[in-house]
Structure formats: C-alpha cells, structure tokens
Image (cartoon, rainbow, N blue to C red; front, side, top):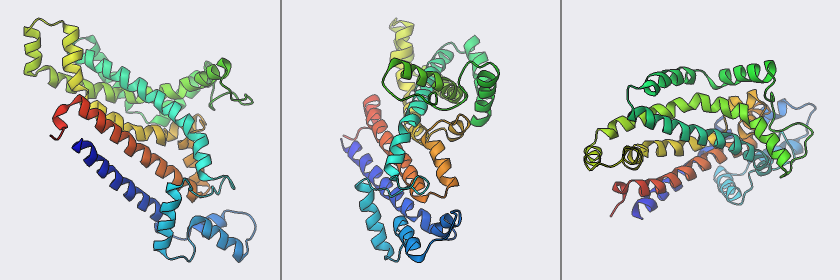
Length: 325
C-alpha cells in the first residue's frame, strides 16, 4: 500500500509538471503564436477580433500567474479551449471524436504484438538453438529496422493498390453511416487489418527479443533446476515458473507503450489517412492550431501516466519483492 501511494504521488507531480509545460508551450515558442496563426488566414481582422483570439489562447494582458491558474482550472473542468482549425468546435470534442479510432488501431496492434511476441520469445528461449530461435529473430529484427511509414507504404501499395485485397485508406467505407450493425463492424475491421498489421510487423521483433533474452537468464536460475528435479512437467515449468518471472520487464514496457497507443502511430495514420489522434496532430500543426496541439499533448501525457500507474499496481501483484512492508 505504501508503495502504491508513493508511486501515486510521483505521478501526480509528473502530471502537474506536464500541465505546466503544456501551459508554457505557446509562450516559449519563438514569435507570436497568435500572429503566426492569423498570418495564415485570409483577410484582415480588427483589433477587437485579434484581442478575442488572444483571449481564446489565454495570451491576453492578464498577468501570467492568473493565466496559469485559469488554465489549470479550465483543464480540470474539461475546458481545453476552442479548436482554431475546426472553429467553433471545442478541443475536447475534437479529441473525443478521434481518440476512439486511435485506441482501436494502436490497442489492437499493441495487444497482438505483445501477446504473439512474448509467446514467440518464450518458445524460442526454451528451445534455444532450434529452428524458431535461429531463423525468426534475425528476420524480425531486419523487418523492424524499417521505418513505420516505409512498411506502411509498401503494404499499401502491394496489398491495397496492386492486389486490391484491402482498402487503401480511412477507417470505414466513405458514405457509410456508423452504427453497431455487424456490417459496419465488419467494414471497420476490414479497414483495420492493413494499418494494424504494419504496426505489428515492425514492433513484434522487439517484444520477442526482450522476452527471449530475459527468459534465457531466468531459465538458468536455481528454482528452475529445482522444479525440474521435482519432476514437474516442462509446460508448467516454462509458463508457471520461468515465463511468469521473465515477463516482468515486458509489463513495464507495455505500460510505456500505452503512450504509443494514445499518441497514435502518427506516420501510419497519415499513410492510411486513418482518422486518429496522430493524424489529427499533424493537421493541428499544419493549421497552427495551438489549443488542439496542447489538448492532444496533454491527453497523451495523461494516458501514459495513468497506464504506468496501473502497471505499477500489477507489478506489485506479480513481484512481491517491490512491496514495502
């Protein structure tokens, strides 16, 4: 309990620091954010309209410390401002409409890569020197060395444009009305296959090698030798004794990867025109939409902190040695 409360305190401090940095983001950027945004707009604005935009950004003549506390209060009440590129839609509405697609894409790819990669790592280490251990790791490392966008573009060209097996973009067929029908769900999954597969192909090698290396070290421990001396079945030793302890670093890595899920595979979403947070962040940067950029950065940070806190709780259950008595 003490360990969990201590970690909670650390994450609250980290969240406060991220809030402060997010507040300072438009104020530390070179030049005038409002001026840069207005320069990209057609037409001229009078002084009252410019003042309104400055107030919208929280960059008016109010003292900085008052702006800071106003920003903190707005965040905790769910008010992240108004999106400039999608005016007058609130930032929270824009993020809420996109984050579900990102979680679907990144979450599906992450779970498949983690489960399949760790299982392959367990079997490769347990049968060290076999065909699986000798052939698969070099291949996966080679494929994983390619950038996401390269693999995505190659898959899009081969399986989308050339062979026509999968759609070449979007999360569902254009013109389709979203619903909870089996037809729409099947259409979404059909569009999900190609972008999710590219992420899995690039990331699965890291999960496999991580588990393989940890599993090899764990298999040399004395309690594994003792379990074999007791005559326990190999499958039980492999999963209940060796794999359970070897998976601890993977649990930590899984928590860190949650940021990848919420942040979205930016380049993958761009290549497939997938309507996620990563694609929306690129749009916000191109449109100089500072409120939306701040909201997305804060959402990513909060997701990472919450995920890592939950992982710490799970870690206590898996490894009692971290508990403070």
